[in-house]
Image 1 (cartoon, rainbow, N blue to C red):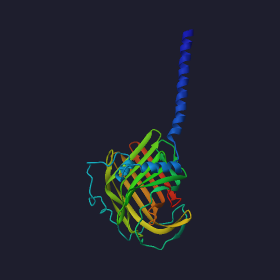
Image 2 (image 1 turned 30 degrees about the vertical axis):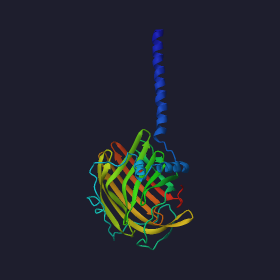
Image 3 (image 1 turned 180 degrees about the vertical axis):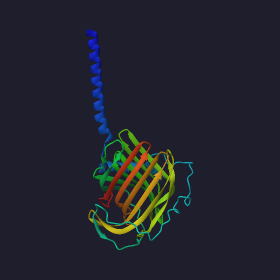
Image 4 (image 1 turned 90 degrees about the vertical axis):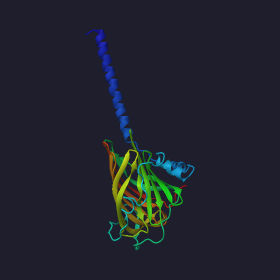
Length: 322
């Protein structure tokens, strides 16, 4: 073989080695990128709270937290009382709900109350810290565990309305609206933003009719169910939910003993290109208006992607940071 031929052969070999090295290094970096999990400190959570409150007024705050430029318009919004509204979710008494002590929490004693006395409070604004256990996975990537502490910001959008913004990681944040009425706590919209490397899902669900997440006063054994209809940026969705109120109990939170009511909820949703199911158990303090413990199992599919998550949260202090 000529000298020129040898040089061409060696040149191709060197180029092949360089390409293989680049691909290998990129693969290693990409693997770390896909599984990035960035915890948020209390200082950062307080900064997020300040940013959430920086808007000029309640509507601007709510629209900013939605992150989508405000509500959908002109897409068949319904007034309360339409099909799929609280009529389908009317409360019923007498159904026996599955109850039990919060798993992993310090349940001090069972309560004797079967019906709550007094109204539910609007939660105080601020940053609530939660002991956190669990994580999530998206198809094709490794399981991502949440840090042992995460933060929930409560931001008022009116005298009896608020948004809860929970930050598990920089790469996973969730928002939900709440509105306290005389006989129920309602939600108008919820949003989830999850990042796994190049995969970014930021989904806002707005309900045609507010969902009754809690019927007041709390009554052990009460149950309700109904249809769900609403809009996402990609189009309409529909589904169903069922819920029940369990037992009253007391849970240790720091140096305090807090009375709580258990609620269990299941949601099934179907959209243009997604399906999702969520099972939720939540222990809420009527006096504080906050979630003291929460357990969630979620499954979703969007296109070719599948997502699973499971977590539990335990409130660490009844006094929010501000």
